[in-house]
Length: 195
Image (cartoon, rainbow, N blue to C red; front, side):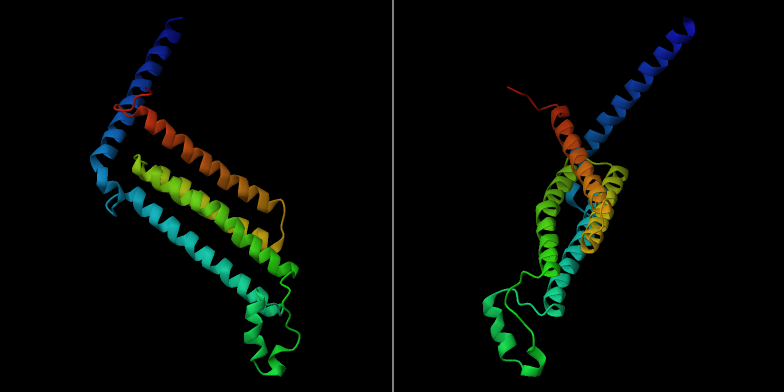
């Protein structure tokens, strides 16, 4: 009985220490204020690295779509056919204007998937930094998201399931965790009132 009481007391002490650390972290974030978005803030540096890595991936995905059109002798739009028509005939043999080729369509869907997911991350990750993300949390969440999107893109290009789905859901879990932390931080702010 006494041992349980002591353990309960130790747990309350640990909980108070966690609350104090959280208040200290939030105070530090508030102190950073406008500096939250400066390179002095390690969480913001991780944000910049993650965005840079994802932009490189987006560019590679766009280049892949162009290469798929070229290799499969397809133009993206009818007006692009003028470039093919003005080329020497031996270089344009077999080009078509119907971009319904499966590999080209897959490349376009990969681009669309990026548009549907990456911009959400850019916004949520930035808000996460602004509300006072710790560098370790930023590094962990942002790193996991970047890896999940690279794996997703590679799996999408190769038509590899369930790898693509697993990577997608790993990224989704990161986005939901960011939302949770942002909303939690908003409700913990001393000036925040529901009324």
